[in-house]
Image (cartoon, rainbow, N blue to C red; front, side):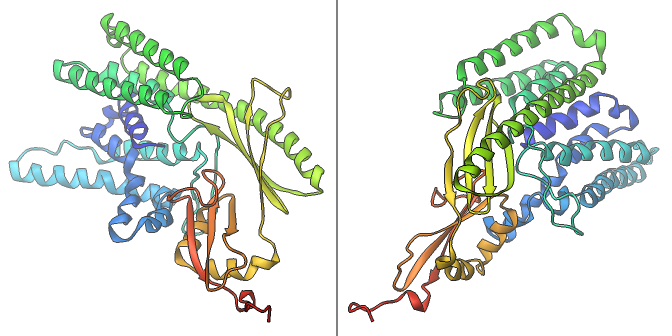
Length: 386
């Protein structure tokens, strides 16, 4: 998930009661909720492929998350100890309370990252296996609304806090409007904007009536309960999408005499009935969109990507020795390869792409790569055919 969501979760967790465990618990919760994403700092020591290699890696694993959960409060405790000695005052920070708050907040990060289709590697360094929840899109405005609403009600007590939250809400509203204006970003932009603005109006009215004074930390607990229910509903929708995807995949495979290897139904932005499906068979990979509100009435149109055959095996094998390709293939869930020029004379390109996000040859991103390779000797021919 995005770091805004992680930050709001950390702040809300603090207001749900963790802040009572020790002074400085709130900043510890916010830092701990974001700490696993420190792996992006590897970009300062390498390129974008270095980031892809390490992101969602050790710091997102159970072992790495636990280590960070212990390190962060230790710094706060040592800092408080040093200040107490310099100023000749008693220590204020309670280490046990900070450790508990940090462990709970840290645990939310891999859990939330698991819910999307990017995946996490929970058992590093012992296993490189990826785990995918496929429940929600990597950016989910619903989480912004729920956790942002709880945090706003419980932390907008002063005028400067209210002004800060107002500016923050304006920026997010602009993001929602901008996403709605982008072609294809949202399925129903007007409905999404109406829900967003309606929620903001309800939030303003709630604060004006002093709802935070009546319920206090229960608001934060309610936010987590709502998200748990939300995930439960998404799990049911995801299972329905998987069932429909399997039915359609069976038809695709049977038509060509293929055998299904694996499939996935992945969520789309701000539309819980729209799922992108990818199906891998022994011969090809299919990608198609499912809309649960249409059921089986309209069969989806699938795009078929045939797997490389033996004629390009040597070229692709040469390309996979490239560092970028090795990192990419270690990340990709549904990799597909394509040789641009099969009858090359000197050099050709091998395109790799992860069909979760893009197709071969579609732009420059971490989800695709082009590797130049020398042509196999048997591909070189003379003009007279010898």
